[in-house]
Image (cartoon, rainbow, N blue to C red):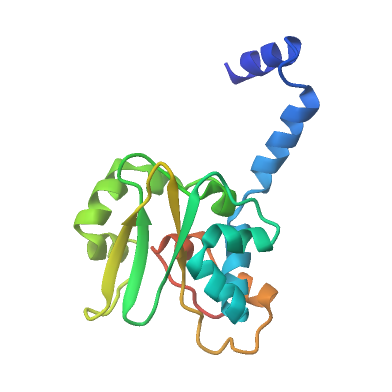
Length: 182
């Protein structure tokens, strides 16, 4: 069906084949590496960190990244608070920073259970948090997306942004995992 619609749009002059190709290339370039670069910059640059926490959209724009059509809210993990993201209605997700959402993120099981029993769900992902750590679940909306700023791994103080970015996985930016130094 997609092929038929695409061909019809091109045939009718609504889009050109080149426009379609560029859009596909743009979508393919959206990977968790974009979000990892944002996290690494926040870990490395205190001025950027403050901007990211105050205005996620403005911060990603300073890196030359598309801000997306939504408000980006960044929540920071600390030793006392662990943040995790869910979209209970569907699968709202910052695709422009993290690429396509994983299947588990879109599943009814994850969407319904994360808000009711977050610690149990996190354990299923292999993440056991201390009992005194507060778990905050953030529900994305039609016009707002969240990004978790994970804690910087211990022992990486002298690391460059590129090295730091390699430590950051998609799951840590959703909050179902943490970053560990390698």
